[in-house]
Length: 288
Image (tube, rainbow, N blue to C red; front, top):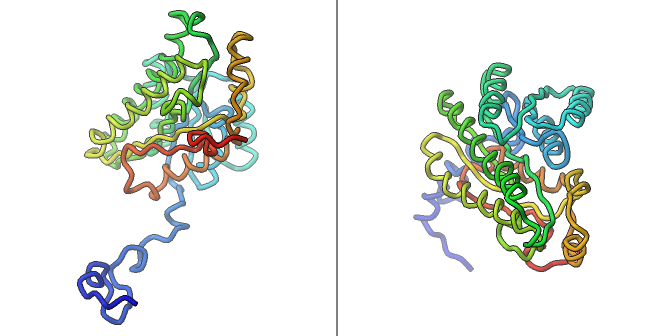
């Protein structure tokens, strides 16, 4: 059906007999097992003591990475360290409030001092709430923006500085939300939608500037997940009633963690400023 195309064959590095030559994946390039191996890599996961962050730490460690959990949840972190220690994983904890720039820088300095470098950053720390428009206050608004947006920005700044000094590049994965693409996915979460939309825009705006430093930054957009944060989210009864009228798919956080893991490996070598929805089809209107 198809005739031989000599120019195409040469472009792939395949000779006229059809034998692979120089094409990637056929000429002694890294195998998939090597690509997925993070042995020797060092990662920071903000909000890594529980929920999605905990699952991300688990997957990174499983692939051989050493990980620092940056979180304010002492009790969860203590339990996480015990769990990961029992599995033989190398995990450290540094208490860091992502809204405090000094603590953010200290967490990065701690990581570099402890492990000699930082290769991966996952900005998972975040909060959300249900509130009618009339119920939003300056205090609740600034809390949302400070944690979800400011914390993401200044952790990226501190880690990018460290990566640039190392001259080895690195990978950054931001965690936004499918709500950052459409408010339909998060009714009665106006502040949250604003903050996560900003994280999406921040990721895209940083992609070009960080590329020349050898740093890849991409963004994951989870949908609803069953996490400790989701189970304890505060909100008025009126707001909760409206929120519960939706039937979007609910993810196991590990469903999202596996995609974050992928973006933390060389699988993402040709990705810059990408946004990946991991929402069970919620954005497309798929219901449970």
